[in-house]
Length: 501
Image 1 (cartoon, rainbow, N blue to C red):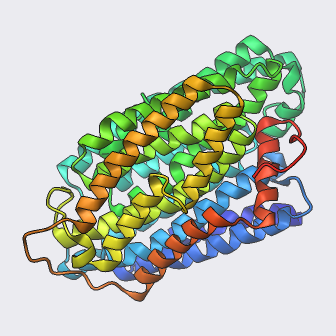
Image 2 (image 1 turned 60 degrees about the vertical axis):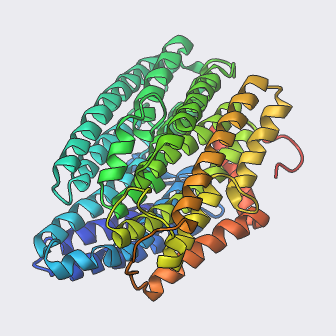
């Protein structure tokens, strides 16, 4: 076994170990504690994988079936980070239900099995070199994560689960058609051998792929994977699933699962553009879906009353923003990748805060959640900060990534894109900020018994806030280099001379 192969295999060890532990007879607290331990191990595994990438363009394992490059390594690090902190958060989130017997040991073990299975499948998505294996792994994430929505067993959760399962399965079926068309398009390149369906082989022969069939493959992949990513108008499963799933599951959904579905589209993008002679047609399609997502979010966010549905539509907007950046290309791709990090951090903090506030007030209805910064200073403040970050308030990092997208649109003279992007962002800014001000600073009119935050709660809120603020003001050189490298992978073209950020 090569050192590079070992680095990739180690990524699968923590979730598999967690699944094994959760088959044992454990208490509910022990099962949730196991998830914390495996989350930390996954962060270490992702860190060693990124370290192994230093000086190597790609790492390979399983005869080339698995690989990691800068793009997949970046997403793997985000997955590991979000799963780790979510595991820590889940211990406090379920503590009250464990104490009252609502969340029993058997439920916690089932939750742990599914949670670790979900992590394993996301890791497989991000390490799959075989494009067929990538599709299989994304389908598996749907099956596993659907059952996580049903953790509390309520009728509304059951309805949300079926909606998620049906809509995303239809989307994945369309992505399967795209995968089949990709295999047909690859016949024109005739790379030959067992590795003909590997992304690393296809990208080397992308200019020889059948352009018409490859464009059709991209359309099916965009709609199929875009359904799982929450791009409008295929987003309809997302508000129900986010509002009914346990808050740790919602955080993982929004923080990393949507990114992993977009990652599949990122892999198709250079194949399509190279086969079409860099016509930007694939970029334009992605741009249209991104703008539609921003418009849909701008329409629905003002009318929301459920705090988690508000965050769900915010996810639709931000996935749209990432798609717009990718669609613009060039510096827009850099901005989209930076925005991926920013959204994951801000949305994880937002869901953590919303979940604890809903527990404090006994409702998800924002009309009944008022004065949260007084009733629960930590989580009320955390919710306000996360919304300020999500709407693009300076100096938080989302302001910088959105500013880069606006700059790219101006340089490209994409005026229609610029007007829709800025108009939608402005509506979301005003309406989401109003919701946040009402929740955090409004007058409740009733006595609220605050939840006592733990030290880990305070560390998470302060840590996420600091990361969002610092990355809005300064980025280390190695991160800028990583963004450049990932941009090269997606665009399959050298960067222009000069600085980008």
